[in-house]
Image (tube, rainbow, N blue to C red; front, side, top):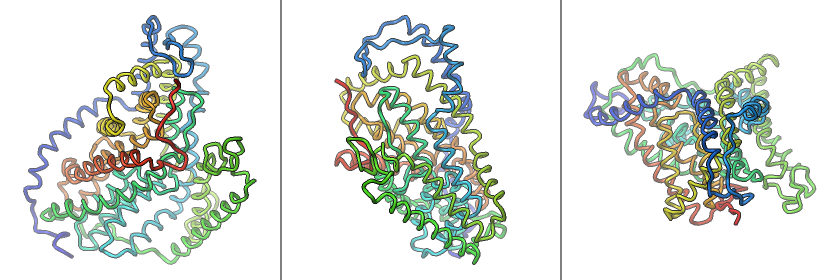
Length: 530
């Protein structure tokens, strides 16, 4: 074991350097804890918009509706008719809430793959065969890849990061930091294939965009080129920061936990190997079938519209509209095959249990989605959202900021909000309802606004104690260094956060400047009427 993993007891001046950070985080934590639960926050905001519609309905505004070119009038909902409208629309509003169905369907398949052990076995295999010199980038890359299993990375990749770094003679906290940077700091980075996050963000973006133009469409793969490039950025930046900044600062931090009781990094068993081979063959077969189905010019997976006929990658192509069901199948079937071959599945009941557990983890999201859908519905019914968008766009126009400055401003704003509101879905549901329509008025597409949100949200995930898994990561660290606290973890992750905000924003601006596609079906400019 190297000296990095087991230095002399005691700590260097590192602890003193985090004093200012600790005080800053205490303020953030106090302020954040005073906010109501996001679900209740949406309920309060809905009532606020509902009440606000009464006095605003008595006022006249010079802002024009971009579709009708008529002055925008706020519709009073504090009336018998308005309340009746709310009650009769409530169930339909919730059931038709765009992000709800797509997320739940995708997670049914992912839940099976996770429950049978297929995802865990794949992660252990990748991390078990890489050379020590490539341990850091591989760990970060696996952390990014864990997004396909939604939150599995937090409970699997991050603790494994500490285990394999310690086993390799390196400081275990550096392994936890690298894994945390990939799983959470790179949460919006992704490989070319959409993960469960893509339909979630797309659903909110689409709902918000249709507040401005009911006919607008947003593709699930509207950011997949940018997220693929972002993956490379996160890996290389995270690699440099881990090896050159974070781990050297940990050199004098003693590993004083119960090291002998630490979970050992287990090798993949023969049963798991057989299960993975069978599952991966299933994936290859599935991809082959999909390709052969899509190749013919008259394939049912191709678009049939006059303007897009025969295209596979446009929004109206059945292939693009089937992304979520395909995610479901490409995790469900290999997960089942793995389970039967590896012996983790005894009957069909185990498969149902896997689906059930994944739905149990989404119980809070379903509650949040109910109140969120009502808030967005009220925003739309009153026309207050559209009024704010037009007025806000007018203000931004008066500032005469360049496109790059506007994009970076969105990133910083989202990053700041992320320090106070830990839920990614809650933040985007709230922010998108205002900023997507507002920036559409400025000619900035929903695709670009969503990409900017991704950067701001992910970059500060790793330094906010209000992120749901942040306390869990502190516990993982305390297994190795007993006196690890919030300030310790934040000071360790702050270099990643700052670098991601600056360099990731620069990458987005570079994409915009060079006109590189954000996704396979995306644009930078929204053609504002008139």
